[in-house]
Length: 453
View 1: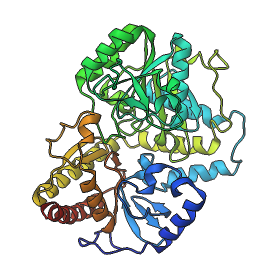
View 2 (view 1 turned 90 degrees about the vertical axis):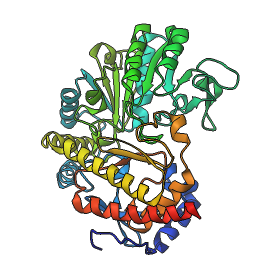
View 3 (view 1 turned 90 degrees about the horizontal axis):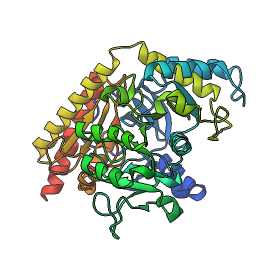
């Protein structure tokens, strides 16, 4: 297959993916190990992947796909990067897990603290563990029970975080300020009752909630740039309101599992000039292997066991293979000071091309992008006007699903949900951009005809 993808959809063979999906459904809930992979919101059969190289995936039927998921963010250097692969292979020669400290843990911690400005960092095995542990730490430091999160911000699947607001900005049906209801079965109402919810990018709502309940709040956790409601970019006014929560004695926790080291070497925190008390990382920090971390000021992190009374542990925390992959990835990022500018330029060109293609086809879209993250919302609104979960939820998900299938049929693997970011890597170049926009023009023309029918 050439890099210039076909402008007309050609049905790709899916027999092997279909067979694997059928087998998986017999032994795994929904046939997948993470829900969005099941293609429920876009239809069709999820592609089972056998290999990844650079900007491309190869599925079980041998179809080569131009990838914009990047394993949901970690692959900022591209898939199967030689330096990362070699670092893992080197570490593998000495074993897969020690259950004891190793030098690579120290080296990666030194690198992370230097690049981000935190004093201490603790490694875990997932982003969910990182956010869960940071919240426990905040409660231990402050002696308070309540936390605040924002609608549409995803912080992993810990019970206390699988909640969001009901109708309105800070109220649910019974009118309780900041009240939240579980958004998953199996989450006790008692857990949900300790989580207060506000609207992202609504500074007045956050100020009002903190004025009413701030003395009870241990921490406010937020995504500096939202990725799981589609890309939502914070306003300066909202960032200022976030910092005001500290005046109530609450800790500010930046969830950079997605944005850490993606938007800059200092993450979104560095790019936006944020001053959180704690930061959570995942994805890029492990170079594609399972990893998470949380870190912050020494006086806060020293509450963590065995230094302090807040317990957190993990058998595979600081796993030598994950530490090796993370070291190789962050070292490569630091060694390429122009990378972030190139990623931003590519993403801007992609946004411009998508906008032009949709406009020519009469398809309304609204694009949010920052750095190497982008979402094209299928709704009729000016670019940049989608700022909240409520704004994003107005998107035409059926139109997106038809467009997604049009892109997949032309060999472009986009995120299979309207409410996700796509991710650009350092190995996406002119050929990939041209191929993507050729596919997008054709897919939008098809969608425009459907919408006009």
